[in-house]
Length: 241
Image (cartoon, rainbow, N blue to C red; front, side):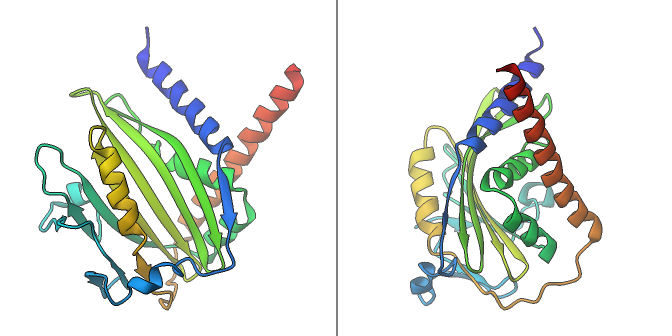
C-alpha cells in the first residue's frame, strides 16, 4: 500500500475541511490596540525590526544558532527543557501593497488555504505537515491570522505541533510568531505562547521597500489557483447531485 498517497490525500482533505470551517472577525480598531498597554513592560525589544514582546516567563533567547536551524528567525526563545523542548520564533519579511490588496479582496477561507498550501509545499517522504485549523481577524491597519499544524517525521516516527500567528500589516511588514512543541506539553506551551503573543507590539512606521515582482506574482497566482480549484470542486459537487 502506498502510504505517501494516503497521507497526501489526508492532508488535502484536512486543509479543505479546516479552511471551510474558518471564521473571522472584522474589527474597526488597530491590530495592536490590546497590546498597547504592554509597551512599557515588554522585556524583549528589537529596534532593528521595530517590535517588542514579553516572552514566556523563564524562557531564554537561543543565540548563535546555525542558519539551517534558525531559518532566518529574528529571535528564537526556548523553554530550556532538553527533555521536552519547545521553541518560540519570531520572523519578519516585507510584503508589497499587492499582497495586502489580494488578502483584502479574497475570502478568509482562500487566505487560509493559501497559507496552508505554503506550509505544506515541502511535504515529502521524510516529513508530512497537516494544517488543521485557522482563524482570520481583519483590522483597520492589517490582518491577523492564527493557524495550527502538525508535522510527522519519518526518521523517528515523531510528531511536532505548531501554532502560528501571522501579522500582515498595511505598512508593508509581515511578522510571524511560531511555536513548536511536542504533543505532551502542547496545551501548556500553547497557553504560554498565546499569552506572550497578546503582548506583541510592532511599529507601523516603516516604509515599504522595493519588492520583487516575481514574488508578488507568485502569491497572486496562488490565490488564483485556489479560486480555480475551489470553483471546479464546487461544480463537481453540484454536478453529482
